[in-house]
Image (cartoon, rainbow, N blue to C red):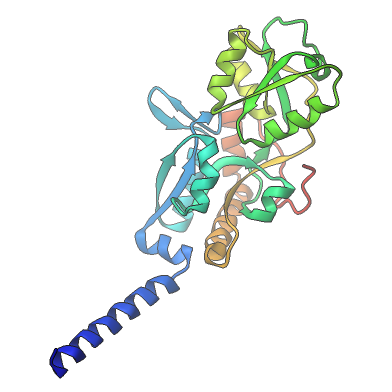
Length: 275
């Protein structure tokens, strides 16, 4: 190799290294802004937050993230997958954030950065319409119940049935639709999920389902989450500011009324979750 060839190769390597270093120096917000796209991972079996209606992805999450994207000045790209693959996908950096939403818990706060709460997440039971064997949460003792796999609802249900007499079997499902199908078919007696979710399901299918009251879970809230690292800090700051603005000007309340039939108060942040 001639001296000139060597110097040219060395210069090319230095330029490539400089470009790569510059790319790595960008944080998540800068990359999102440069690409003009915010990638959001979610499942589509969690009505009224995320679901498929007549072949279209709809729900509170869709409406709210549309507004967040407008505030950030970018477009949305949805990445749809089963819930048990959503959080691993976030950690593998397949997308920037998770819609979900996810229950804000102590364990999750140690690992992820949450947005401001966007809805209540207190856990309750859905049963078959007219099933008088389950009139209160404690009546599931000794029976078979269900919940979404790898969900905070399953964790709370597991803790609840541990204190009941007899042997209560918990079946975990890859998606809520599968759990609801088994409930409708009589293969299980109840499904645990957030109160907003099961209230919506019961309203849509009143001849099939009804809600067991009162809720058995601790008072909790839903939020969106991202990675808890320096790279994602500015992006999550921007999303937080956008959601608080959407809440303050009444857009969030309108979405809640649209999807839940009513609006409700949520704190601007959760620092000490009950769950």
